[in-house]
Image 1 (cartoon, rainbow, N blue to C red):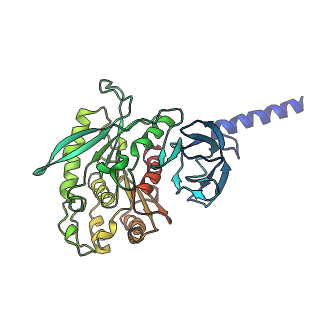
Image 2: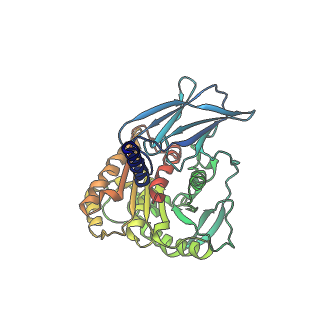
Image 3: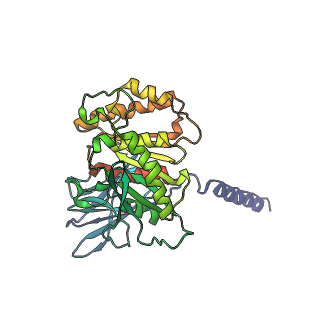
Length: 381
């Protein structure tokens, strides 16, 4: 009888432990991870790594499908342990490091590079709507992507919004010699892996880019006519006063700050940082990838940030930068320095994430690879 009572006690302790923690000590939350490739390869290795503690895991993937068009591989990994992955095809053919988390279904390797994809879903052409809105004495094109199942008549289903600079580089593979950001594919993957729903609003900034994406906040660190008379304050007002109200009036989107995000790269990363800091009432997170913070002197940034009131409603800030070409090395110094500037005005470490990729280069290939990492922090509540 005593033995039975003891076993019963142990049983209830185990149940309580699982109930409180969601898993027993030492267990892992394993996630399916797929790779599709157009290349003829007999093997595929997934090399997972963590930017937090340098832990690694290399796994030879299982070939699960093969036809004349492509081969598909599968494995499992723990997204709580690893946040990046690179893929090895054959002996020496490695991809760059790619974001890995619970929003990532997998990647498709093709002649166009590496693109996020969702297993068991058709990889369709990315369609978007082009809208023209009045901007000062001119017009600007706004590119709006909505998921295939978006229904404008379904007013009860609401979507988050990511407002992005350089809309011309977000959706079309031929946009640059490096391809596009592939943001729609990343969001499709996130939606397939979670309950999050999202649309993307890209603002075409090809014309007058340097001026439009440079807020005139003080002394420049670089003597250049391209940035000397920045119009970024006007651009910020355009986004806040024209673009956002238009989207909220014409699309089934949330209007609160927790579902409203900003993201951009290079000068676009600088500008979205400025927009988010100026309008914390509207934007809950900022993704500044390879941001051009180095355009301004340290004194300029410190003087500007002194005027920013830090509260519980201040936006979450995600900063990424590479460190493997001359431009990224220049920008990397101030990307890391922004952490210190923000902490000096009272920003908590929980509201800032800075990721540096030593091999990262200043182009769309690397911003595409890291964009799902921004999604993890912006949407993982």
